[in-house]
Length: 408
Image (cartoon, rainbow, N blue to C red; front, side, top):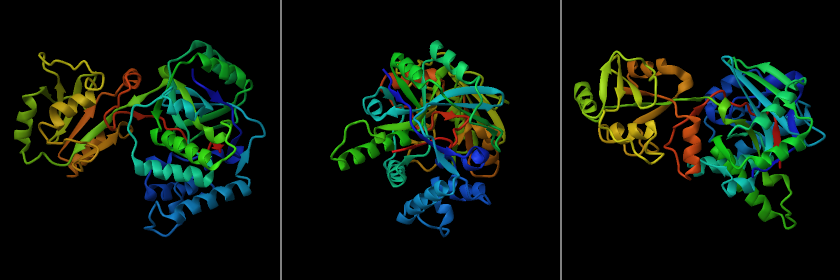
């Protein structure tokens, strides 16, 4: 069963919540973060990307970066921009984008559940990114951005959420990107805690590095605490838990910088040997088992030939895997998308126009638009204990950092 806990949230003062809350630290680089935080002294980007307040060119993993994060965090609390709730609570977090609504439960989830695969993973993590977030958590003694979890929807929990959202919210604002963010405090946390006893598993949708870093931070705190009991706040991590039927996954598209020494005609001929190809296709494939390819100023539609034997393995059967195994590797000699510098990835939120732009500007030779991986695929891969290929899912809308902070 899944274990969730109420927690005493550190959160923005209501009148400046929209100014404090920031995009996740890992969706912007230093230059973009500096531009977003420009002229806004309370933006949480001063904490999550503190290098923006240090000399240009500062190594983002330097000691002074983490020290600056702590200094800026303490200042936000000292100035009253961040306040601490007096009692442990659960919260609800609603996002509305383009008329679509999703509502998740904000809770402290058990690190033990993560370590024991009750909270299931589908991605590998990178040690350098884990190191950074672990150090950020330990320096601030806080988890400032939530892990994005999902579960198979449950009608009892749906009814409880509907009741709670009838109450006045703590925050309700629309961010500059047009996404509406609303937070409620839950009145009866025990009902939710008990309801999740009937949920056999949670699944990481987004935030594998945050979750792995929370586990590493717990291990460090436990080892340093001779009186460890298992009840300390560091034994849990901040998460927002959404029912699976509310989530939207966008495609994670691919661009390749060269054609591996082939002319465009030679490359297209090689693709035709492996896929059914039509010209003047829609830039976005309409169904699984279809891909759109932008080459030489034209969109081509790719589909599987009639004699294609779709793999039985849940990972190998994903569209991202079929593209990799039947085109990117054999035709373009891209063996490992994690390390090959010839391939880049473009989140679906940027649209197919971005793929066209990259090719037309000469930054890529060919682009591939994919049908989105489904939440069913994600859960199936996780249940199988398998790992998805890199850059398989792009979730929108993104949760904002610092609306609710969990101190450890």
